[in-house]
Image 1 (tube, helix red, strand yellow):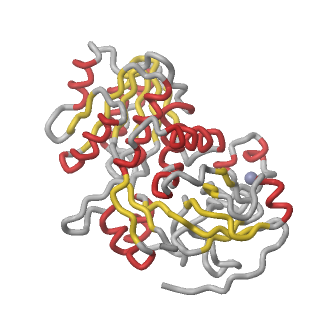
Image 2 (tube, rainbow, N blue to C red):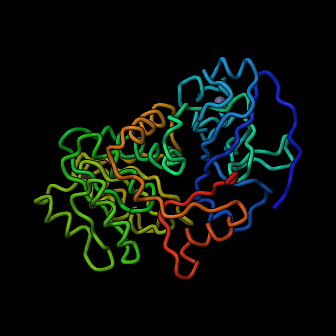
Length: 347
Ligand SMILES: [Zn+2]
């Protein structure tokens, strides 16, 4: 635990009192791998505006006391990608992603992460107002759900009647099931490991028609049978680490189908058969982060209470329990099973 000075806020800046900050797979990865920076992790917080400068208040349409979700990215607003609306691809600061949770604490004013009592609202921060009456642990799901909206609906253009296969049933896999259901998919199939059975059951609650334990069943054969050999118009790959699901996704997609690759891997995919892609005219899309519209759509879904999203939330932990929270998510904490976890730094 470290303490930092809180500097005074200028007209384009603000301060957020963090209510909840999500723990996610990338936090676990950074925690267990050598990382060149010293950062305050947490890049998807929700909180209450504690201080806000005049210009920032006008730009964001917010005031002190408002609850906001804070977007991960800190886009420059001027580069080619930003002007085109693809601000998640802004690289104005060089090769590095300019985002919360990734800036070194040596950069003033240090408060660049959600796993802290206060978050600095940079002039480039993008905030989304949220209903203050929502339980904070539900409100903070705006990020996984925003990812689901963008990856399982917006990018692949999922529409009414499509069959969608979601590979992986973590927070983002479950969110993809919700988004595919919202998009009007007629059949939604989700996969997971034997250890993920509680998540697969939850996927059914959220609208999946079929949940496949890939350690017990052959996913490709099962999907073939379930779809009468038509396969899926959209395949969303959100597993972390393993490369086999990328290979499988090519076989799960129907001819002319779309594969969205959104699960980060630890290495390159071996035996990638490009002929599978061209012979069947597949579209492969890479997906990084969430955009403005997808966050807004996700927030409306949360506020609608149409899905029992609270069933996904397994743990609220204090700031000094961050180590425990990370280990639970990494399946390295004896006797605890986590799906969606968040830290509540001010509880
Ligand atoms: Zn930019």
